[in-house]
Image (cartoon, rainbow, N blue to C red; front, side, top):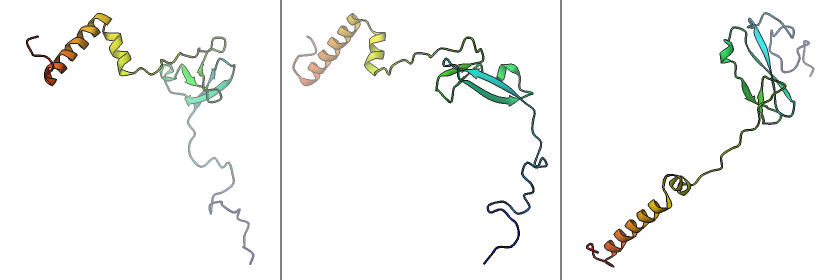
Length: 122
C-alpha cells in the first residue's frame, strides 16, 4: 500500500518550506568571543539591547572546562580550589593549642564527675 502525496515523513502538515521567515521575529543580538588559557574561542550571543555590565566577563569554556575571558591576550587563569575541610579543621582555625587543651581538660573533668570517678569539688 503506497502513501499518497509528497509529504516528508515526520514533517508537520502545512509546515511550509524550510527556512520560512514567517515564524516570528528574531531579536537583534551581539556576538561576544571568549578565550581560555588553551586558546580555544567560544562565542556567546546576547540581546543587542542588553547593558554592557550585564554581559559576563568570564564563562566556563565548554571545550576545556577552563575559565574563559574576553581578552584573547590575557585569558583568566585557573583558580585554585580549596580542599574540603572537616569540622575539626575549622575548629583548629578558631582555637589555639592552649585553648584546645584547656577545653579538653574541662570536658574530661565533667565526664569523670558524671561517671563518679572524681568528686565535683576536685
